[in-house]
Length: 250
Length: 250
DNA sequence: CAAATAGTGTCTCTGAGACAGTATTGG
DNA sequence: CCAATACTGTCTCAGAGACACTATTTG
Image (cartoon, rainbow over all chains, first blue to last red):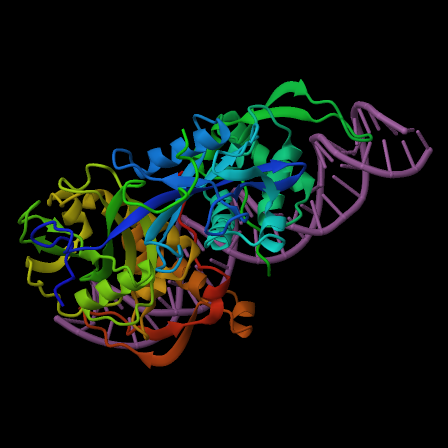
């Protein structure tokens, strides 16, 4: 077998198969205290009238990251996403019933998604709670698989990167941050210990290396009762890693 | 702009650009106490006579994982790799000077690589210490970038998966395992603390949840002096995560 | 014997978690 | 007042690391 090496002597259409390459984006946000994902309802075959991840074809003159950025902009109007990372490539032979399509999935996290509107070839576009999307909807193509992988990756990245801050506005309360971890990890955290973890030790605070910094501003207590929470902003501590480890399920 | 959605009404060559899709594999092993990578010397243009990662074209009737498995088999003769994970997709417009090529990189870890021999379109094939490959060689295409990403990913996966065991034979000494972590993380670990970490607490050992299990067999002390080390095999504890955390560089 | 590697014991420090208690709001 | 949320204080426990010490080999 002489197919082991990357390039045959000459590039010729008979030498290698070609594929369409698309980019699909899993756009996550937290709304109403629940983790939600942007989906579009297809208005074309195949999988007509089914929900799918937003995406589109990669252009030859752009990188994969640029294609993802462009799709995110076109879909949500967000120009400079704070978190947009490549998730995985999917290339199963039967993942598109008509032709060979390799898709590269991206993961994006946003504090809020503006108006989501359907494009010309989509019947609808909206946010779906991820739980509902996976359990009540049947997603087009292998997008349920992609969404599952995205959730696993997000849970991992909470433990390794500053992903959590990408879900938050510039000023936020600690319980908002806590619910980011709780929603994605599917756990319940002790508010007292959470505060201590993100505020860090006194030493870290003096070094300017804490994960959050109090602003002195306070939010209103919107619900029924409760002390008004302080508003925080992101600190320098994230460069050395996140403040929390995922609880062991032992 | 109507390119935002995944599929145009009809598939037609004029509707979307096509790409060649390749799979490149970063095959890592530890030999002579150093982390090494399999490279092939190109015998074709472009990048003739430069070293590159082994790889080849994806076929339309196989998945990406199957393509990677096939390439690994063809390159090293290994059939069932204990660790073969997708790393990342690369699709920069100029990464191949002749045509649009999107490549999907994979990461493989092996306890030993058998005879590495050059294919028909390669001038040579051998193991290179990764340090030398990155510093002394100029790799073809964007393969230096890929190799760098692979090393970062390997370091991460040591902290999250059972990757370390994939570098080891069925029976191994603890200092062999220790050098896996030391080589990939670029750190020096205390042998005493390492032993305690991988053997785990007495409770874990009784639960059958420790990371290594003594076999009662002993290796010969090959170097000049030293107590013969016991041989261990992999335990059940890896299901709950690795035994070690990467040392903080603070 | 010394040198080298394998492995144990033990101490300290730090961070995670449990949980009681205080502060401040709405009703 | 009570309920709810936002914090602070304090205790305990387990794991990480430093490091002294023992065990067993080669030369």
